[in-house]
Image (cartoon, rainbow, N blue to C red; front, side, top):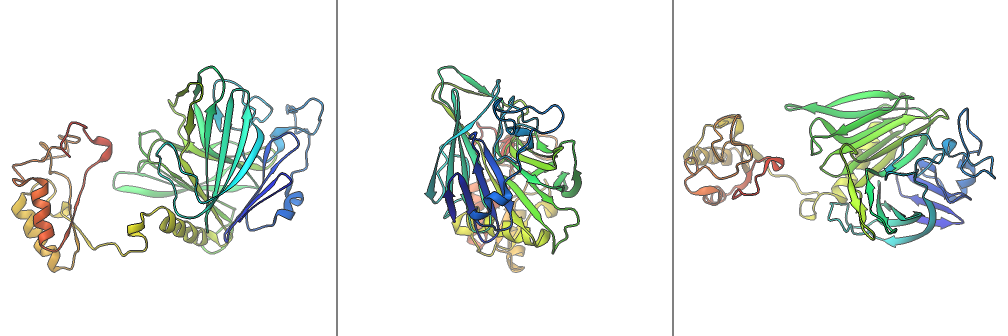
Length: 409
């Protein structure tokens, strides 16, 4: 359900509510994100305006209560008195103000071709502008989660360089712990939890892909949350490239969280009329601890991320030849293993490393995906046909980030 009344916006499903407000200066405030509430609660959640502390400045000289640094925001710029981390950098101060909004059934297709959640949902689009730039924020509501992304358009006459553009930013009241899942080869998904204090906590990958070093999924939890109790917020990015997420507590007790493409060496030049679209970020909430959050995120992934043909379908019993062969195999040996796998009740045979180029150890050949005809005289197609004739599906291992575009893969 999405409601819009007198500058208030409520997105509410069975798991959470997101309550936004456009204030008198056209700034988009994040009044609430968490447990279900009603649109009538807007005034109760509104932050008491003030001039901030110390070196704070006001947005409007005629309004002593227009200090951005003390407000919980759903989007922020830079150079206008909000000293917290900015979600956008375009080589100049940014000051986006509300222009219009619209509500749409379903998801709004992405023009960039990036992957996104599908099937169902309801979308709130909020348009904000400043001189030469138009920013459209998309909030899409599903049964147990919400997604956010944005599109930046150059409406001016000069080229603009975008050095940073996050998929979302929001400010949450209170203190949190940030849990990330980091690791390396054969040591993936190690859980790490740190308190979010006044210094920024960052989860980032700059390897060119999402990587086993730093998974883009992370959690923010209230102090003392357990598997079955306590407030937990979950975030993830529907994107496989360099990613960035940060959390930081302000002097006023607001925790700013944002996520998107890593700004490390990032630069997109937008000519007049051109747009840049960010990846879709997923977020959910649970007052029933980590277990409750996991259940809601799992349900969202199963119903809106997993391709239709695999949704709620039992996965096949898989046999992978790596532990049995490593690099030392030929077609005859693979077919013998396939017979044994079939006898054990396996349904899918996966050929792992060593089938291409001169890949007889892990020091050569990676990325040269030309089938090794000495090992596989009938080629990959011939081996696959023979495996399938035994009543097994056939799968293949390779590393996408190492593909040579001149190969015959």
